[in-house]
Length: 546
Image (cartoon, rainbow, N blue to C red; front, side, top):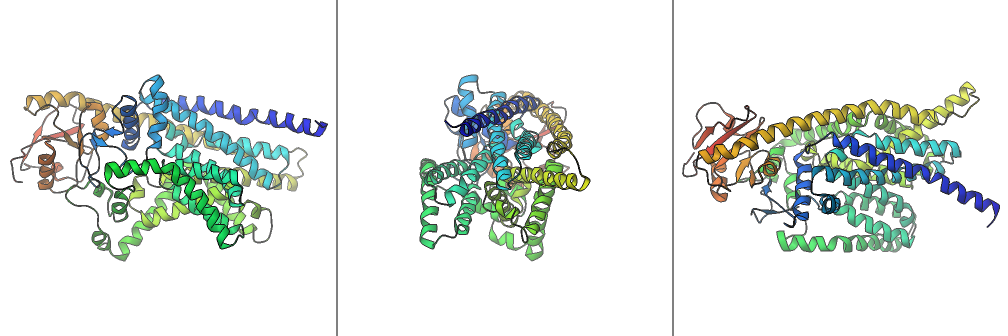
């Protein structure tokens, strides 16, 4: 072994300590932050945790809450994942099988996922720095800063505290984008790896299709002929399809279709409560009735929500700096070759895939995205913009240093500044989430504790499903079946109760239902449950005609 090679190996081994240390610190920090949140922040998170628990306890991929009536069979317990994908629950189920099926165990699984993500982001930033030919000292600080920003990212911290599909999708998307440039150039190992990762990404979120579109674009930009383009894209698609095939077969046997039918409903939403419709479902006619003004207004609202509420507010200065860096880089790239070096890179793939997701979600799912469609798939764009922010501020510090004639290389300044500005926002988000989880847990537990005795006193048969606007939370707390409350006339609610043998309705918060109107409501009798007024409970006379 030559001296040069020996020095290079030694350097590589020493440098590997950095991502390993970042990963270890991330696992501890994110699990500690997650431990502050003791109750699933959203019903989506509760859904994944409950299905994982049912799987570990031998019940299979089922759930006792029916939150949507769009996909038959409408039975309880309900086969899980008629719309969402299973990998998030499968990830949680692994440690649950050993450590018990608690919410904290699910958070532990996601803390380990966060550690993997940070190591991948470090590698991504290191490659980007090398492609920009940054000096070694700057490249090291850029990679370290990108990893630290990922640790402190509010959205990603909360995805450990409230585990759902967000974090595993981000991990798989970053891994896919690291392999994508090599696969686009025809590297066979990279193509196999990319196909496998895309398959698992699809089993996490269907936005993996946008990663596939990005790969098809990268192959086209590689300057190959049509035959080569088809061969490379098809090879990756086939490998990914083989990964997904068992799940498609399962969905065919359970739901009669390999693809979620509710996606079509989500296209025509005019309000998100329509998701819970029983007698009526979203339709093109109802969508078109909004008129051009309503459709365009929803799209504009979705763009603003995704940009401000999903990216800028939770991501803070890192995301704002990343957006500014990308915009300036695109302008500078017209005249200089430096920024163009990233066009076909892993970082470029992340930014392109994230942008495609942003646009398609806002244009085609402008109402659904207000309840999380984009936020759960925003990991690639959040990571890409965070890395871009570190690169951009590093370049700005370098230029200021040359202008001011600094004697030292202050490569540490950019990442440390971004971390210092990001930390307070992350702390606010985690503490706010912890307070919210405590409040929600108190409301649900009080209601679930008082409800059985009240229903028994009213002679409601045990095991009768409860209709509610919080079906997943309440089902888990009660240990019994629940049905989503449709935002429909009372006649349709009574019909739902007859069809499933339900005798009670529980309404939390404000909800678009006539049950919250003042005065006497035909067929429904208000029932006090002693839950400090946190929920309203009604008995249903299923023989009544409202």
